[in-house]
Length: 89
Image 1: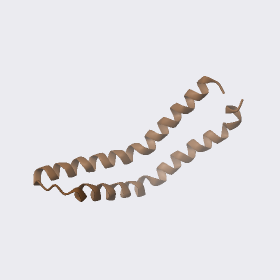
Image 2: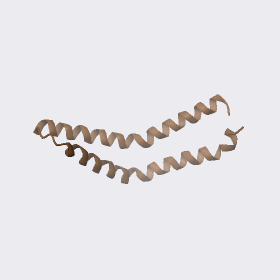
Image 3: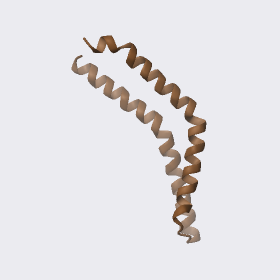
Image 4: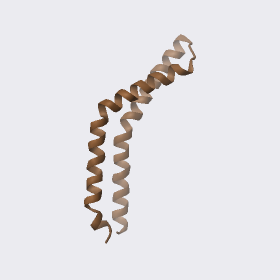
């Protein structure tokens, strides 16, 4: 395994991690900002008010995006395992 192969695998791994984790983090970020704005406008400072909507939005996002995320991870894993003999040289 040469240096270019290792860098290529690391690059692809980070890209897949960004693809899979990015949408869920984005959903959490948007919901958190919206809830914070609502709290600032209404002056309601309840800690559970920020947690519950984010939890619900992330759960819905996981349900909706779960199949795509699984397909992306399985494709990456299949590519990784199919090239295992080449990486060992």
